[in-house]
Image (tube, one colour):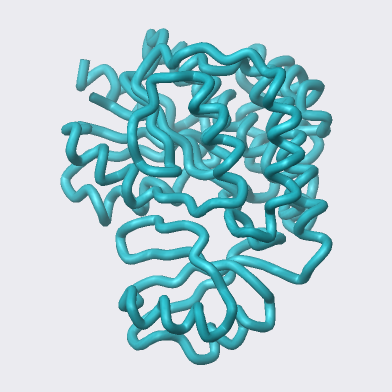
Length: 306
């Protein structure tokens, strides 16, 4: 089984979408996604600077659009209809939902647009952010978070936990990290996957209530618990609740290991999830599709498993 994974916020870089727009029909595809999300994805993916695409209302639709576009290109190159399985990290779960046909692409992008704007609004109300903590003892980290009023937002596995909360508290954690740990500020603009995002969860719930959902057409994991989900409406409900709840990517990778996953392909804008997989799933081949030049190696991995 080869699993396709879709990254979350923070993986975007200036102009990363440019090479994809050179593929036949891709500009038109991205423009359709832009109409659904209510964001000028072509402009933001080609000429906007790092600060602009760090804005949550821009970053999230841009990342999901890139993941879906790169999946379409990979599926064509590899002669695939569906992947063996799919999962997404944080907002990447919307790309996963579309790839698994729980949501159609337009609905997925529309809901991402709602989510992104609502999370940006929630983030603007307070000065919060996120930092990755690498190599910390879990007990010591938990004590530090409690002392500083921070929360664990992403359990990414491979010794990495992303924490979130007040920017000053994050700075104090960086100044006095747990023993042998590194604290790395992330390019996101809020304390995502914490109680701070409760207003955004409510806004997304209202939008998602009317969305048509089908049961997954392929294996689909939720990063709320790491388990497979076979019911489409249940998966949409998890997309909503996940906004203000921790991401358990560590458990998702544990599920991959338990089910004998033989390879991982990370969709654009790729890199972070492959890095985690190489540390947590040693020996499992992993390909990051960062640009169209990576499509052939990703297709070869899929075809080799077939």
